[in-house]
Length: 282
Image (cartoon, rainbow, N blue to C red; front, side):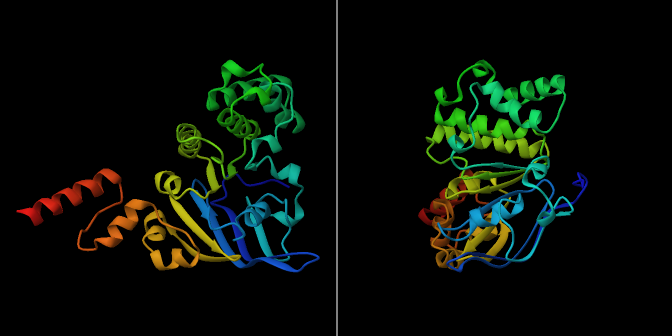
């Protein structure tokens, strides 16, 4: 078994159903989804919409009730979760749920050691991951002595050290103040710019607007929308069905359709509104 690093479609999901037994709860209904190499995809929807269930199929934590999931050219149903970690990394919503070592550097080293990398390469991977997440000064610290944002970056580093092509990040900014949110998301963007495919779940529509390139909306286990950020946030009726509010800038422009904008950058929108008001007052 070998995942294909040159695979254009890093994730291919067809007709995916997931039913939780023994209660028979239908969590996913006939979901089709293809994610291409290098994308930054935000998966959004209310609690219970199926977001976490869906991403857990991508690294083998859950198996499909019906349908198929192919990652890196390989059917997930045939793979061990430990083998999939070489290709697709999963960062949990709460970093405390995946951190267990006595020092920051040991936490980062655990994955590549477990995968059988030689000692000198493990050291190199740890050094690089520490630099990527800006935690070099804390390498000997106990992880649980770090702040919440630092722990989140450590969780990302512990996955990066295994050199995955794809990163699944579940609610990466939960519990962070806005400054740490931006710091974590700037790191994720940097990884995407470097070639990593990013699959992110989040309840923050502001962060989706700032960082994502593609949006998939789930509602009651079904995929109801798939498009660019602008296409998603301009579809107010469909978002309403999923109990999602678009960022304020989109809602403002929906209220004044007579003002045409080329994009939804805040400064661009502000300039268009100022020009319109100036024209109206003339």
